[in-house]
Image: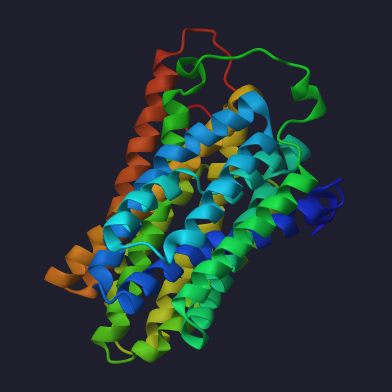
Length: 403
């Protein structure tokens, strides 16, 4: 636990982790609030709700790197003003919008989503020295797991106990509160030493095959997580134990959190591509469990332990490979990778489940992860092979690895 004590003793780290945890809750509740409003209150069905979600996802994926670049050039506060006003405005007026208008505004609102997760990762890179970043990013991954346990549940409670319109207004209030809190705190996104350097490095220089591989691993990890979530629900419904789904998902998330805590306490980092490959391999046979909810829960745990470590390793690598002057854009690309991974994983596995069985859904999620790990390894090997003889390897990087 010494690494955790050292990390939490750093100035500003405790406050940052607490603030970012609460800032992520509206983001994790957004999808559930919008889905319930469209599918239930507007009576348009879950397909229509999913379409708006997909359009918003495209907006988020396109907007995240742009917002990151705003942070790189103008600082955090201008970006917070734009996103806080923009996203809060969407949630205020969403309850009055027709379905076609929601489709259009969902895309625009997605582009202006307050990037709480990117802000947290940037601030960690600025506040935490390199030797403690693995621990800090592990805590950040655990915090993300906890926010996903709180956010959607809170949206369901407000929507069912009051109304979905109330839930949408609560989203607007939540965004306004966390945006204001972040504006007041204004966490550093560059260290004092990094602020002294004003050199701008072209994107083609820092967006290397190795970094692209890291982003692919991030997308692949979320592909597995999103696909696994769909397969869990399908498996529970197939076995007639749908009411136990929340218990299985909570234990799955808790296993990921435990894995993140263990990873953060380790003395050294593990290769990101290796973590990704094992996550995929351990996901493939989950569907063989069948039977009752508790057997599925137990079989999920080995893969669950690797979820948070894989995500944490992605954040650590992006912070190391991206130059400080472009870190905002790089973390924005990371967020886009996560978003696209979820956007592809859930419908792909859902299609397989609909036309085959839940077991094949787990298999597809796992195989997809293994293939992404292989592609990331090839990209890193390609960069190594292209490097001129005598070129120094990046600090902390093993030749031929993504991490």
